[in-house]
Length: 130
Image (cartoon, helix red, strand yellow):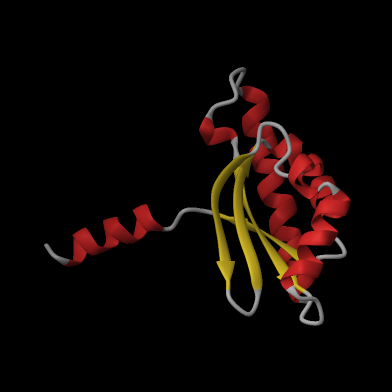
């Protein structure tokens, strides 16, 4: 059920973003979507094993794909890495392929549509101090 809901949300987000980007001739920042990628390391592999797999797969040559903006890239100790990127919706396939070709074998992966909540939270806090 959770997977179907997430998939429905992603499809809705992409369709809205695609229709928006098609009406805009310039690729502005507002036409990009944010995706957070969880790269969960396999617990049975040590760091050397993970790095060797990434090197063999050419991960750092193919990720991030062209026209991808890295918003953040964190290491979560005991979990793996969390990367948030901004891409044009029509580049989603390129992003997916770069992970499938480069990260598989070193990490299991999860993708999540993402948005910046910080400005919303700041506005809410301003309203509470009035």
